[in-house]
Length: 428
Image (cartoon, rainbow, N blue to C red; front, top):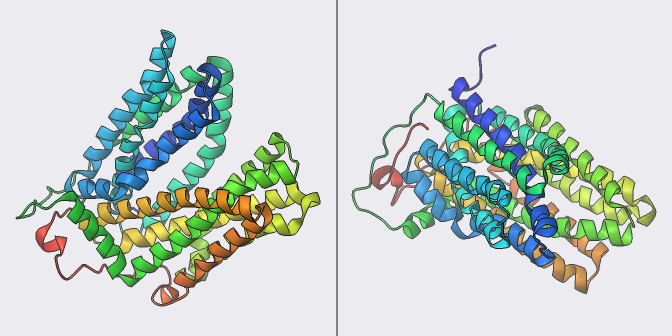
């Protein structure tokens, strides 16, 4: 059977590198706060700050990163981002061997999440070229499956490595995963066309606004952005309340909660491998709407199930949410990659990442307010309602009538277009 990918060898290299990197990322997400708490006497505030430094760069510079990704080589951007992350993560086990590791260094390393912003925007912009129009969904399915497997395997690897090596040396696994990603990028054979520089240089802010304008001017992109924003806000709010519900009201043990979340990861994997088949039977709009409603239902099961059935409801809830999350993310990302003008891909992806992480941050704050003022159960019900509202945006034209997105055309901005004034690229 012929490969669905335009450049199967290079896509395979990107996929393998990203799979290994996903495992390493999960290891460091567990090991880094463990070093802070157990090795350096850190507090809950320090752990929270480490988490914030991981995500805040997406909110602050996502759109600007998209501008630079459109101006530069996608592959080159990813290579330099991997080099920087390799050096940063590798410094922790090296310094720990000399006994001079500090919390300050951990914060600096966490701040290297700025490089992750550039890498993620470049990778999402590069994938459509390597996969080709016929391989975009299949490519996103494989990457999503790898990330889901890494959630389980990486967590298990982190526990075993920390037991044997200690938390600080375990972070070496993440550093080596960046090395593997770097090697996979260096082995790529395909090279992108030279970027055509604009006749008149423009500011990064102006180009970032152009990316937002493209997202808003195309009805399909606009509806997808509104749907994703609504869903992400509700999910972020609900996720912040789930653990409080499980521990305080459900009286569950950490082991039971861990089991429920592990089963949720199984849902992620099943959703990833079956997303194409589901969309083949339904229109794309119905597929997205169904996944949104399943996500809302997953969170609604918790308060509806009652305290006596907390563990059962949490397991079913996490499975449904994981399954629906994979289906939704794969098809949203695939459609965006198909219908976005190639020369605008970085800016549109950067804007999308800023919105996603921005609503995630807002959702965390909303959870604190709702949970304190109205209570955990009403907060979960309200969050489920917010999530379900996202289905409205994918059940209206033109998304409602799109079958799979394969035949959707790229619509370029008519005025102030980067096709005329800005950078073009045709490959990675």
